[in-house]
Image (tube, rainbow, N blue to C red):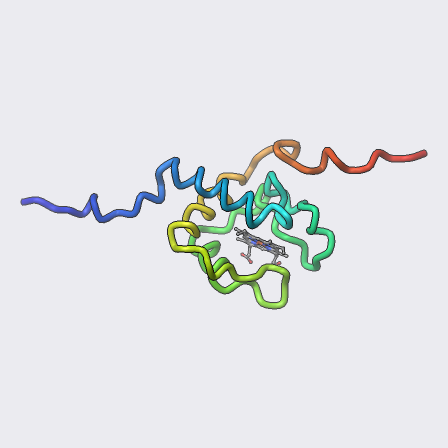
Length: 117
Ligand code: HEC
């Protein structure tokens, strides 16, 4: 008895999925969600509600997939209709990998102005 089940599985849980996610995230998400996922990208201050901080919140894969397809109505979070399903999966894997990372890691906050007396 043979089954081809394994061959039919999409390769989304492979590390390659995450590196594709890194690339897509850098191109499409950092302006708002920040390089390190802290919700502190250069455009983030312009929005209410503010972009999600993925270091503190970890939406599940189906939620990220849904948000990328339809966006979050009434917020700056728009749909990304050009992303393919594997691309959405890769992004979901990457976004979830940001959870729990230290604030200073990859953050743009280092560029914040120094306090003046
Ligand atoms: C123009 C700014 C902007 C860009 C670009 C952007 N986002 Fe968002 N995102 C937001 C805002 C604002 C929210 C908060 C929405 C809310 O409060 O429900 C958000 C929320 C989210 C959420 C959580 C939504 C929920 O309610 O569960 C996910 C997941 C997300 N973004 C993923 C991404 C990904 C992945 C990208 C890149 C493909 C991206 N975003 C690009 C502004 C942006």
